Amino acid sequence: MVENLDKLTMQFASDYAIEGLGMFISPRTAEVVRFPFPVNERIIVDSSFETRDLLYLKQFSAPYWVLVLGRKKISLYSARGDELDEIKDGHFPFVYEEEYEYTRPSLGSSFGYSRKGMAKDKSTMVKVRTQSFFGEAGRHVALFLGKTRLPLIIAGAKSSMSEFKLQPEVAGRISGEVSGSFEEYNFQDLRSKVLRSFIKYEQEEIKNKIREFRENDVPDRVAKGIQEVWTAAQEGRGQVLLVEKDYARPAYLCSGDPVLYLRPPRKKYVRVPDAIDEIIETVLDKRGAVLFTGNNKLKPLDSIALWLRYQIKGNVP
Image (cartoon, rainbow, N blue to C red; front, side, top):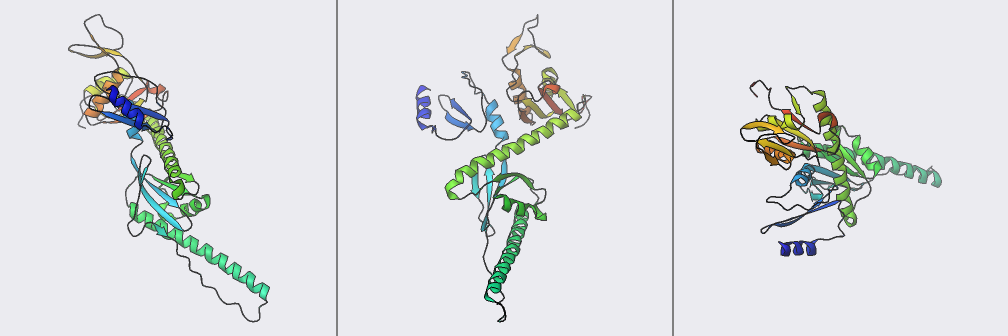
């Protein structure tokens, strides 16, 4: 294990822009994980890995689309995390072809007036063709995305993004924006910025989920607090678990007793080092979903809440 740790240390590129880092080592495993969010510093030696941060990372590793808007070319990328794979399907990259047709000035026109007229005509033509370019691009994007509801992040100059957002085919499909000019030489900058935009989008979605839980905070729909959530999770009634990222709580169990005790009971018990981790694993094992919030975001729900599949009285799911 020490040898594996030395290898990871040698491989790690410290100049890579990250906010958090995890090293996972066992006799058979040696992995470095870069986190796009801060993590609490800790060293854990146990019979299994601490996976809370990995699950949180998975929350920000869902697929999404990135559309890079330029005046001459529009590129579409399939994205996951900060990895971008360019789509090349005959429609993308979508390239602007510059073609102008001008009306010759009449012989009776003065030379100065003719030059002004040509400049005006060219300016009008450029505007018309730019609008046509973004209109066609909007139709191509809408056709490619179809009915999928994956988030779409657009990147480019503010003027290009403004023009693209006017296209009715993409109205309501844009989940985030990144302002700037992105070429091959600053592709790494694009990767980091679109990931931050996607994380911001996901955090807004979590806020909406918290609001939904609070608006439906009744016993038949939501279990809240560690003891209620524990019982519902053990019964397999958990559909979506909402929990603060670093919330941890030791607890106690007694053989044959389904109650989770928060203080040592008088009868013989087994100590659970972190009941929150046990709840997370139980919900996942029973095919529920887990969503993490920022710390102190679930105080009205006692830091943890579970959306129930069906009512407590045994109604059919």
